[in-house]
Length: 240
Image (cartoon, rainbow, N blue to C red):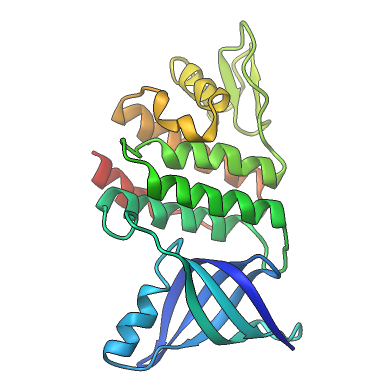
């Protein structure tokens, strides 16, 4: 059966001189892996440009539930991204966000609301003219809503955020997996602002680096079998 669907490219891996394997989160069937024939020369460059992390595409494919690798019949650009592919910081953020998405969701999940959130977040990043340095932090927080472990905001007297329990607490946990003041306040401010106001929360580069690692740990505590995240190291180099 041939299906048509909007999709979000998460990653692509060279398979041969004329083909790649792409992982695309589709609106109709969730996360799927596709064999994409790129050809060679200029045709290959054009096709590969559609497979950059977080590219928004329209695809048609042969859907066989018995297979783990599906055949992509056609791929076209759904919405052109005007800044992500050309801004080094946004490109690195896109790489990190696509890795977080790919490591967090299952192969067979279909979630229309999640797809809408991901698409709107990508367009927000692409359109944003001020510094995008906090985007990935706010994205991870909002993404956790769809994964089932979104934290409740901080209350008076709660000086710690227990990553293992996923909650703010007044008492210091008996383990090192915790966010402490003053970073707890910064984290809570990110919780409280809307997605489009991610740049309203002020923090130092050191706080940003610490918080992204804490959020990765938070995800790994609450997602069984989540593989190691590595792309944030490149992002840290770009952000300083």
